[in-house]
Length: 313
Image (cartoon, rainbow, N blue to C red; front, side):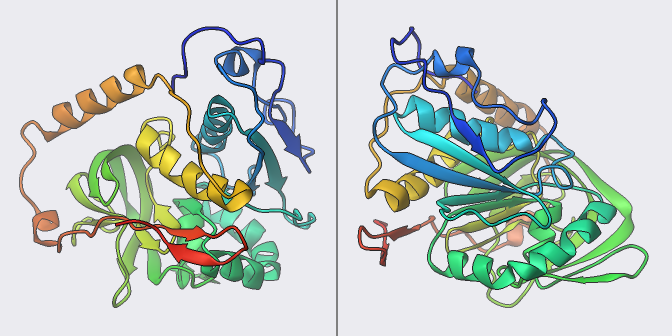
């Protein structure tokens, strides 16, 4: 994750972090060296990010997705406000984007009751077009059901039409996807095998890696502006276009518009190209070649008066 070059006289406006009692390593705004890369003041409005269960469901570095989005918002001239939502905690009054990460089966069980409390709220936010990115364990819980390797059934929110079953075989390694937002890279490490329901669009088509289940060539799921994926890395710093696609949806919802600033992503994009080229060398055609071609992502964007309108094709 890289930012604009040069210093800024407006680098004294860090991101705020609301509703948290996390230990110091989690409880922080943007470091000065990050805000110092911004070349514009944070005067375009606030964008509120909600990170679900950062203690229980961020054990694979997925907190980096939230930090990436907060940094990029600041570089684009917006003021990020991060809400860490913990089990039993209050729900923030304002939500412009929701994120969740990966965790162990025990972590999923610990958040299950709180997730049920806010299930209808999250379903409504998803239906209203709020962008969401759910990784690994939270991706599974946004589906219909997750059955642990011991046979325990954890009901999901049903926002994504997917069902996951735990098994003894882990799917581990680097991944390259073809998605409606271009090529996406990441790293998978999961034992859950996920199957898409009828009509459920995948997030991407696997070019390298195992994906949802290692057999049908699908990876993740996408419904409206909600994306579920197994990709760690963390995902967003390695894929700036995906990060800014989510930010555009959130900023338009929060402020009515998205006016990006020039951001120097040369290092991230160079690493992205190298990863794709390296992994595709020698890659063998597999089941993913038979998956139907993905449509381009046409996000649902909130209008200025709270209505939802279709974005450009």
